[in-house]
Amino acid sequence: MSQTSNDDPGHSTVTVQGGGLRIDQFLAMQEGIKSRSSAQKLLDAGLVQCQRKKVKKSSYKVEAGDIVSYILPASAPIPESSVSTCTLPVLFEDDYCMVISKPAGFAVHPGNGMKKAEETILSALKPLFRQRKLSFSESEVLVHRLDRETTGCLLIAKNPEAHMKLQKQFADRSVEKTYLTLVTGVPYPAAAVIDAPIGRHAQERTKMSVYQSTASRSARTTYRTLGKTDDAALLACDLHTGRTHQIRVHLKSIGHPVLGDQSYGSGQSETIAQKNDIDFLCLHAWKLSFMSLSKKQVNVVCALPKNFLTLLKKLEIKIPT
Image (cartoon, rainbow, N blue to C red):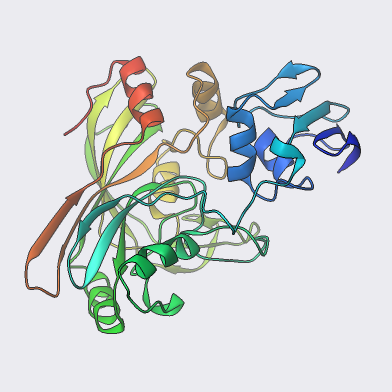
């Protein structure tokens, strides 16, 4: 994939052998960087160059023959486990559970293809549990999942009983989940229900699909348009089921993929993303409503991340409240 030269232990130069990757993905494969979140820190700090030009956007594509150079701070690998790089603001908390604001760039738990030292939401939760003097069981903490690049409300159980009872609410579909997403084009009608089964893609096994799938399961999403431009729209999406990549797959199936989606995008979505400097997945878990074990109805709203807010202001789309 690359040839590396690093005469200075803190300064590395890499010649790209095969192009087409985002620069953050390429950097994550290099020694001493370990993950895309660490790569993003180098990009943000202005420590990465391609063809002798500084690169700060993670979506920048490297091509075969490109020379990429980067500097590791203090001539040492970026720490992945000794110091947490994942901050988890707590949006709601009682004796039984908490709702955190999940940042982009972190998987909720370890999975296939991940590096051993890569930080996850699960590992970042451990200090929160220690601070509260709570026992921590990896299998009884996460009540549901969010995709790696999705931000927003994530429900965490504080004990095994809460985990079981909160998961049952998801299984019974009594939990209300609303997402905000910026999509390619303007859907017509402005509000509708997408009722289409989703299954594993028959050829691309890391993806899900409506049309080219195996062993499909029922999936239902309601969307409504909150704002629009000539070629993009802000939607609020209510999930009635919880299939893998459900919103992303459903919106792609009706010709309006989520902007910034590297897996389910289209030529049109990539053009719009490039025009508007969109280098992140425009999908945010906005609202979460459930019944706590305290017998109180809990309604949580997670504010949009800064990059999403900046984009909406740029497009002159009203920010929902």
